[in-house]
Image (cartoon, rainbow, N blue to C red; front, side):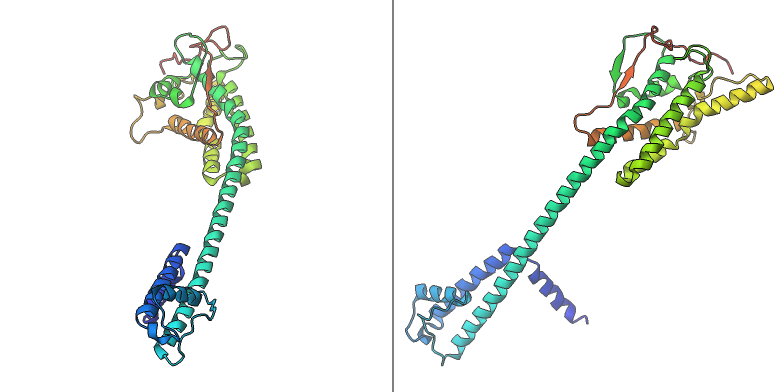
Length: 322
């Protein structure tokens, strides 16, 4: 079987060339046989032919037109073999050329189909990203509020891209969020943890519904990021804080407000928990997905560091010494 492998490889190489290759060989065939007719077999025709006539004869022979105006002598075995070889090679080359051209046209059509399918897929994903943005805005509003209540100074409202907001200073700042502050957008009758837990619950419900409805049409990598976002432990921080507060109330214990302080830059080691940063990293990746698929869209966070809009600035910074 090994003896046939080189032959099979050679045959595969010959059959899978571009149309231009066969066209070039076809022209070379005409030239080579024309020269052969002119200088080797010129006397083997009923009337001796020159170079120009030999080219003409080569063309009508390889194309199998055979007008019959130039007649070879049937007694010349060499000439008959040459003519037969040229006709056979011409027929084979024409077949290979047409097959290659057909394959090229088919490949072009397949490529156009793939491009159309890809354009349709991107259009579909872009539509889904447009639907996703308002859901992310639920979380971004909550993030902006956390940033506000842990900021130390009042300033005018501004918009900022999340990737520019989520710096080391940002993470260090919000890691000292006081979950048990009673300064929130609803007044002073609720813990901030309860407000944030409600926000996160609304966000998770909307995101879960989105994933359930559109998972079949989303790229796998985007679907994975959304699933990671939905199930991330960071979103459970407010709920955990409420549970700890309830235990403290039931057992008459003082519960520390330093719920996320362990994620401060000065506290983290190489192997420490970094749930806060990890969550924001996934969120940035999802935002990038939206901006990549929706042309001209920039997702921004609206930061309102003004005290006349509840909750007040710096109203939820950890103050206790626990």
